[in-house]
Image 1 (cartoon, rainbow, N blue to C red):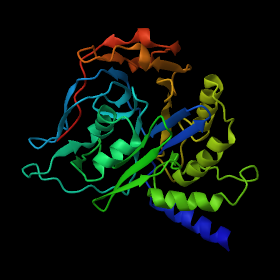
Image 2 (cartoon, helix red, strand yellow; image 1 turned 60 degrees about the horizontal axis):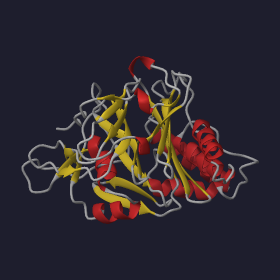
Image 3 (tube, helix red, strand yellow; image 1 turned 90 degrees about the horizontal axis):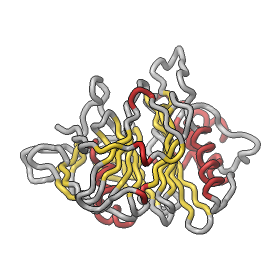
Image 4 (spheres, rainbow, N blue to C red; image 1 turned 90 degrees about the vertical axis):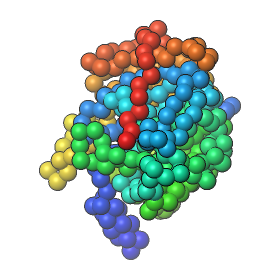
Length: 346
């Protein structure tokens, strides 16, 4: 009976969720080894570049006259979407931020002429990377909602942007930020090491609790649905070797996020818009190294954030991934100076 109920619940979730898919997972090994990985899955090609931002950049939430403004306290390396948004990144203190799709998201109403500050959803992750060193700092600052997250349509589409935000830090702490029915819900606990898309996070935890009673060596759900990817990521991130050997740890985490990826070009008669994995990142929060690979280039490359000048007044640097340029290994030297992109706003 319990199996029937589970599969009825999953069927319901699969029916109602969007086909946009991403996965995020956090690995904790010995001697302060913490590594966060994510996949970016999207229906169409999503133009990504890698940026390194120094401290001291003046930013705007791009929400009109009532935009929140700030100056970055920490340098960071991030991946952009179309050079109008930060989707993923690591700052110099080892804080990682990732935004993933959540169709259930509903943000508070924003009055551009009101008194409440606003921030475009495109800058949400960057605000966290710029301002906080730890998860606890971010939760303390954001729980009182100092600004309204302002969303809009994905450029060139009729799809309204609905995201939730995950953060992890160098101590292994984790938090998930979701806006449901216009209210901010924060899930804060070091054990929250996995996040996918729909359903909302508390339902993801409930589904995973069910599967914890079934040995993963016997059976794991294998579809590309968010609920199934959550279960696989949760099992495998604890099954891989627990080691402080960076080479082995990073390789193991890459194997987990690849296992949770959606094959490129996959199609379905009933789901013509299903999302293929476009790129994957792995952030080594102990050593401040950001690994990256795209589906249309054969090599994994990485960026050592500690080897960039992050002082206030230093140059913003960009690694141009357009044209499927192939990079391999440590790629700091391939970055070029670039003017910081402007976040898309209202």
